[in-house]
Image 1: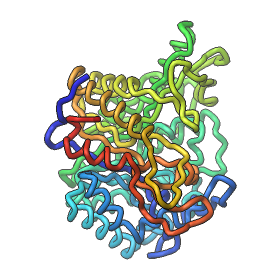
Image 2: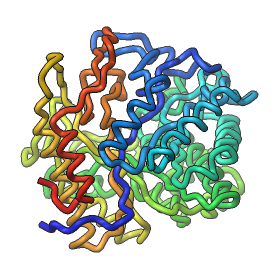
Image 3: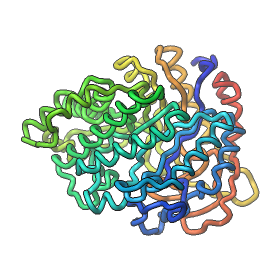
Image 4: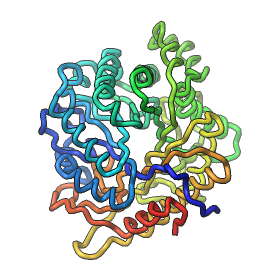
Length: 457
């Protein structure tokens, strides 16, 4: 265990998406996205108000400044700046983000833009089935280039897609805006390839026109074989190849891994067109961002082939050696260190964990501070694991961004699942006053940032 501080320019911050924070779904000229189709349920809010960040962001930025944060990763809502995803851009939406970014910079907080976080403009989903269509690739590139032209002189760090490897997995159709598309092997690989084409073109444009940096992002879940059976180990490595290394290799100019190209060729799929692979190899990432929350364990007993694994998503079992959250996410700080070290050793590019945290059901009694010691323990252990990766294993890490450190709706719209060090006073069906209330972990994190990680206790 090491107690030294992080490097002088280390980035401490918070990550969010627009639909989980902004609200104002029908204000400022915003067009509808696929999230506007979602109806509230027993444990699900709609997305109309979220945490009302559209109106309250100065208050939230002041809390981040008080914490000592110097980086904020947020998402531009595509349908706020281009209501139908393919027509005219919305000056009012673009001005909102200029004001938003200027407010961050005025507080000494480095903005990081993500261009897409699952909220396809509804028009593109209905008209083209989202990223199943090359037309939407073209539309996304146009949108991305416009945002770079608008904000490239203010924003140093960029992402195209949140957790891009999710577009290679079951569940990809929904987040790609392909709401009526069956998830066959061909369709999954088509969506994955189209999203990579879109990323590569935007990354290349950013490098051609700005001095900014961009990284392709993964949702990196550590995967262990359930047993020492060779089959469990083999398919665990196959999943790593397809869900992690395939994209990481492409992000770093190596192109797709051979097995990805082989499975397309052997099945006579036609999604790769002339010039695609050359375009993908022409890109590069300046840093490697990823989200990390947990690890999981794969049993291959029911797996007959690689194609079967890719369509089914795998058979995962609990790891008896790890603690588990209320949402059955297994807590594994050592897995965090392992991923950082593997990425650094393979690619030798700066590593940037930009999502990490623990989601817990919490309620505020309206008076007493929430005593979230479990959150302090979670972040402390993950920060220590990251520090060990840097000081003992030699990895270069840019910073550490927690996920939703001011409470937001979960990815499923569930306000019960809270990641924040600041409580937002609303429930799934009662907006209350949405007061921002620091938890015990807020004061701990403030001290950690002030010491630049030298003292995690």
